[in-house]
Image (cartoon, rainbow, N blue to C red; front, side, top):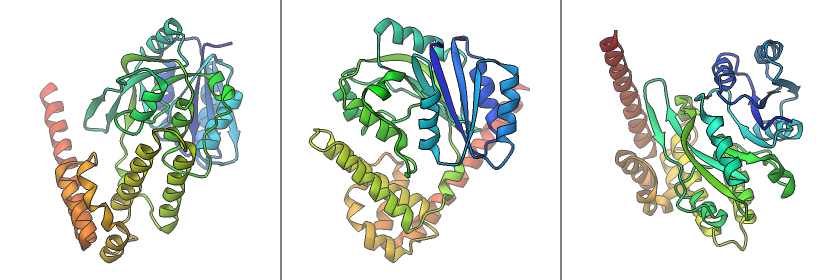
Length: 329
């Protein structure tokens, strides 16, 4: 039985998945199985999975009908046999020493969940994101999950039997909060938590997220997710904190992605009450100003300005990256 099961759900990632898989195979820790779950890809992802499986006996490959991210993760968990599990997304990558340190800490502390730091980056910049919780008590980490701790499962080594012990699986039919919801479900239980100060995971920012499709069904799904958290945390002291967090997430997604759906008047009609909340959001000052303007009826102008400034910022990053590269050459 391998010590760790690494689960990678894959859907149409032929151009990006090799970097992810290669970085996992380059781990200094070697006692693992790598499960590649092809979720009904329509490109050459499955062929690439087969190629890698022929090269390394630790790789297990599975091809299934498309069911979404949560379904692929649940499928991976059903096939995993490792003592611990961790997930990776095929468009990200990992540093080579990460699993070694996570596993050593998990074993030393006999932890159910071992957390670590991560990087947020794009092709031009990288930012270290510390994920050290203020307390290692599950109830306190649950509160921080809606404040300053990311809900990702990719930077958390979790005992596989935690999922079966508490009958926890990833929620199907939603998009964007699967990890956070599952982490909240786990943290409702008095599990043993440890922390290792290493940035193991490189979370790649995709600028295409600013142009994702948004319509009334998106809003309805976001509201359903909100109710899922309300129900999950009913009777828990964290419920209101989670509800406020998810309400803000509904507003934020609408602001960033709703340009092709909301008129300025429609945005104001739905989100005017959020004007007084904008100051508490984790956004740059100029973005907050535009959000307030959107709540007052100038959404289309505000989002055009923000997207323009974002493009300018990316150009500046590109120039700085080119200058730095030229200097090294």
